[in-house]
Amino acid sequence: MRISSILQLFATLYLFLHAASLSGQSDSAKAVTINTNVDLVSRYIWRGIEIGHAPSIQPGLSATWRNFTLGAWGAYKMTGDGIQETDFYLSKTFKNVTLAVWDYWIFNDTTSFDISDFHEKTTAHILEAQILFSGGKTIPLNFLTSYFFYGADASKSIYLELQYVYKYGPADLTLFAGFQAKGTYYATKASFVNFGGTVKKSIPISDRFSLPVSISLIVNPYERSSYLVAGITL
Image 1 (tube, one colour):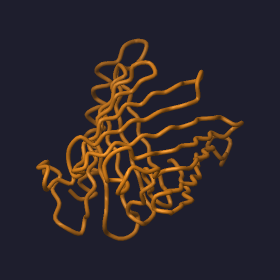
Image 2: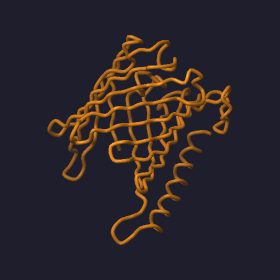
Image 3: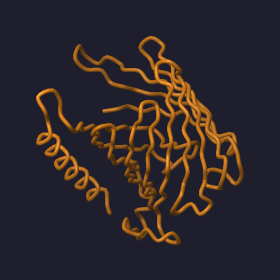
Image 4: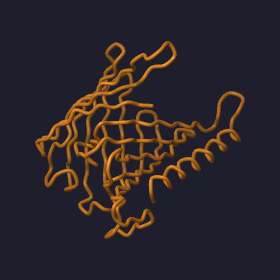
């Protein structure tokens, strides 16, 4: 599936969900909420791992109904061929707890690839179960537990991440620490693989428009690597 086909899929899904939201709306609010966004980042770093080795465009599309969210997310190199990513997910939020299942499809567009291949020995898909605990406004901490239960990671890795969220004036600060507790996807042994922080702020461009920007400092102690990543949201 090429990027043009993916964009066509996004457009079709958007039109379908938009029609569903219109047909299900009440006098007070729409039954289905549609969200879209596009991020541009100088490097795609995920849980301490650099993917693609180039600037990345990252579109997202989701529909939420009664705390259920169905979504798609992608990451595509802005220069050169190579590793690309298209993900799908389904989540359900219960107050301060969110349960989710993700399908990560990471493929190389210079070789033959098949999105319908789910055979565990040949698939490029990784299926993940997530539990996210959020302290909300009372306790500014989030805790993520992630388990690769099927697919391209035969070691079935477990990743844990603690986040501290703080609002300082017009900026939002998130500090994070990620640890691989089991498996070999992020490292060859149990290790801290993702330390750092992200600052997000909207920069006024005009009286009616502000541009959300972010700066992330990411350190992977296991690989002894570090990244300073800039991003904007459209």
